[in-house]
Image (cartoon, rainbow, N blue to C red; front, side, top):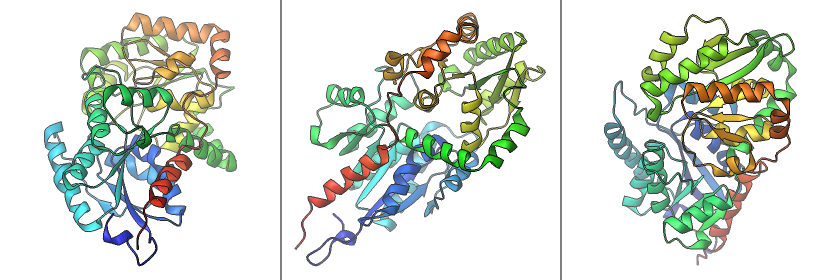
Length: 392
């Protein structure tokens, strides 16, 4: 424990640095940051690496989170090695200045992995939010599968979202079981909090209705997100071929907020830019995206977080990947893997749109990723550790 948390006969506030770099990280860390900030035991500092600079600010604003350390590490055309090295170097400066008692990172991004390694080099404890996810294939998803295993290796607190994730940690590495905490997934916390914001302000939803069209007046909406590195090239061309065929059905409207990565935008706008029933829009903020998820008849994605969010909204999800590190949703029946083959995507979307019983079944399944109290459980784990520290 650092000097900032030592007192004379009592404990002062422990200092925790919470690291975010991408929009999904910010969404999933926001409930944790807010819980720590509201506690009497801890001082929370927020470090943003800016890995998703353009998409990060709106999330932090939505949850009223201010940034204490802004790193802005991204460079045009940078590869993963150069990004990782800049993150290690920049975050080292944050550790020197902040002198944290603990650092919290989330998930499987390059930001999270670099921060965890930097802490390991300095002997600073790391808590891993959303620990234990596995596909058992280092190349899928890339580089996330590698990143999450590195973080689990360096962390001394592992906040597993499910019992299956806990079992993965125990199978993959010898860890003290008392340092693994099953908490639920914090994205459910964030989703439910955002739904409360929408429900409390009808003008917000009315504005979104005006932009996207009222549900009862429009074709059924298929919401799409796709940005995975392993799909770059032919995978994205196949996805676009499927979306074109879905748009030609005539009874659906595909809405696709297109990721900013040029390797996504290039094929997407080239192959889908002239279709009336496929709306290619710029990335939306999280509030708008939650609105779109609630409106959608079906979600077609390669995202991890949406597999965890959609069950709370009763929405079926087709995952355009061959493997998933979230098997709980597969087992529950809330998601189905469809890969990137156009015929398979079109066939499965058609089944879910044309067979109402499938949508009804998805709506009736309880979300296997939690009840919206994950941040509360993480805070309890932190408080338990703190209570075990006795100073004189």
